[in-house]
Image (spheres, rainbow, N blue to C red):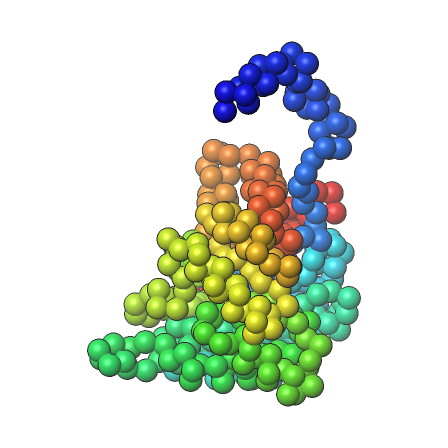
Length: 338
Ligand code: PBG
């Protein structure tokens, strides 16, 4: 300790970190983390009921889209050089089991087909979960537990998730991304995909997904707010970090090809830990609440949206994420000169 202090004192004035901050050229040369359009995955919401785009009130600049808009979105994402898109669906009909999630002619499979037709080289991911498709808004099939409470039945939910993944893969999705947080679902979906000849389709697991207040604005976009209770019985407790590594290990063993941490900004420590513990690509979901905060502050004239957003996205990359799911994908790509 004493030695360190002494040698630091001896370094100045010889050692001066500011030398490397003198000009944009030097700063760029020594910058450790970077963001580029290819780091961004754009979330999109496709509806089976809309004929025109409908703005999402809680997320300025985000729209629920009719499926007929899919081709145009695909070309936009490709032309901007985005890393990909991830699709969510708003079905005509909801039921207690979320069966519409398995409909090969549902909004997501139709949008996938249109997007792969319009831009075959674009990476198209699909969110696999039933909360947009259940009438109660939970991420699985309900049962009454021994206490008489309604809870999500883990094992009964696996089947509908796997069938939904199969419909998405059959439509041409490149990556299946289960976001439900049921135990065992990665292995179950992997087996179902392999059994149906989709062994080349990758799984991006929402491995580490917290029960977060920052999903609030999304629930209007995807019309999936739970009608009772909350998701704390299946999503992770925000106080837990070691548990993140446990979830990561399980999903790796079950065959996940990529893993995700969600949300991103309040969980940068978790992204860094996950990065240290896996050789798999790591994604991070810069969720609706993170987007809404920046939009609201910018609209109130409190923040420079471009600078604040690019800094936030850079921080997620610096923490260790290889790619970022973000509603700012299109704007950020343009700010970066795409
Ligand atoms: C569940 C799902 C949610 C999000 C992505 N997938 C909502 C939830 O878990 O309540 C949230 C994404 C966001 O807030 O941007 N299918």
